[in-house]
Length: 365
Image (cartoon, rainbow, N blue to C red; front, side):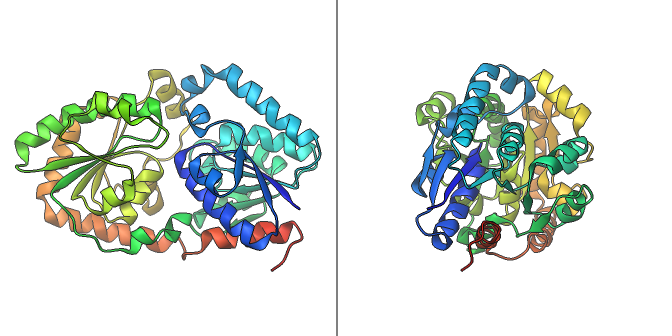
């Protein structure tokens, strides 16, 4: 029996890690999973040390406020490593925590196969040497990442993007006269973004007749939180991709959800607001001209990016209304999204990643 320790830190990572675990279970007989993850990973067989909602925080200041909790959790993971029963550690993105745990795994002679690389090409090239010292193999989801990480002597393999393994991105669903609202999956994001979106909606309603509004709700957050913050007229969607596939225009929080929106063919405006401390720290670290994965991948401003003070109701509404009425601009955006899809490789990323990890563990099909 093989025991794999696997850690994902947010809803997106939970989804990708779960698919990887399912593929690993098909290759490795009686494999056992322990680590940290959410509902999807638990359904795939994970014994999670803490609920995903406990660690799903973002931003320097927000993480710093929970320093004691994360230190204790890191220690708990290290104690499990010291028992000598872990055959492989698979960190899934979530670099702040996973890089520290990878260093300890390496010292404990546990192979580290990092799935979905930290975006060091955007904000932390100086940390790439540290990554090289703690990882045995890096399985990346963007083709340009291979050249970047190989510069630092990291064994890197492009497996494709796991989002392409979702059938909904290939479906043609009828679009309704609805604006999709995606405030994020973490509680702190929801509390920051929904008030802004609510004011934005009130402006949009005056400019677009008969338009409805749908909001993506996170499994990490109790629905009562949403009900206290949003009008009854908003429709709640637990399936964010279905919301994006059936809406006309989107207001989307930065992150993986912008890539999902592109794969859904949804014209959208990107927005994000965080604490002043986290924003200033991030601004000094990020070295790219864009924030959205969509704009980064195609290296031009395909979608509007509204950050911090620019992410205000009047600004967001202006871009949404303009995009809604400009069919030519919508079609141009959709054509760029098709180009982005072609950059992500072919479906089967989860299977290829699992085969690579299993092979490194001495297991062949």
